[in-house]
View 1: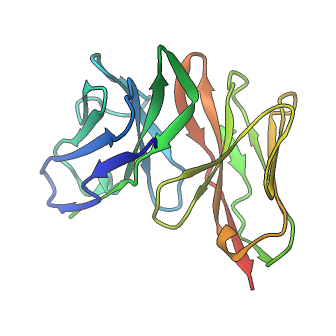
View 2: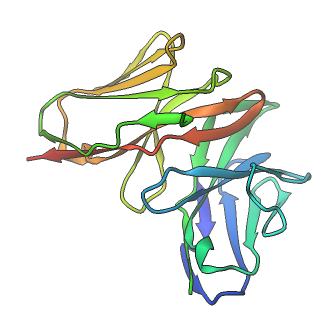
View 3: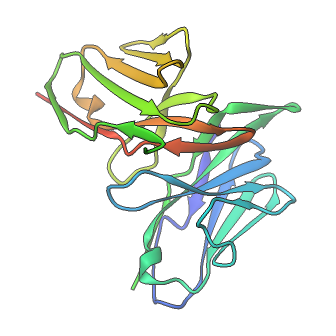
Length: 120
Length: 111
């Protein structure tokens, strides 16, 4: 149980294009999903917290107009990198918090396999 | 000061050895603590949560010292498959559930 998928696994695009990444919780409902980014030899950095049915909360320094997040259902959150540039090339990973029976299991976050974005 | 600090290594140890990693964290509001492992170009996978009382899972033992804001991981009888990067992770606290990751400690188990 507690599987999180991401699509696509990798994408190569030209500078200026927009890329959408999907994050799905396959066998549980996730009211909260998180988006992280990891540059080579760096730690994962939290970009934003995505809450179902409400606006995402962005970390300091992350442009909300550039990284659009939509969490329209309890099993799907999307991250759209708008007008991507080479400096946006990174490994984007989502995680989902398992929500059970009215009391969230705050200790358990399950990670997707990540999406490797390369912007030429 | 970095939010989560770890020695990046690499630690090269022979198979069967015991190895220990440490990390320190700066956010006193953090309430949840974890060790994750990350293989090259893969997503992080939860290894174990860390509790103040200390906890053990097979060959892995984790300790937390909240007063010193210090977390440790001990691996006994290391296996080749333990080769990975070990990430010290704390939650952001203050009602936020996002996680703060250390850069990781790279472990190489040699046959």
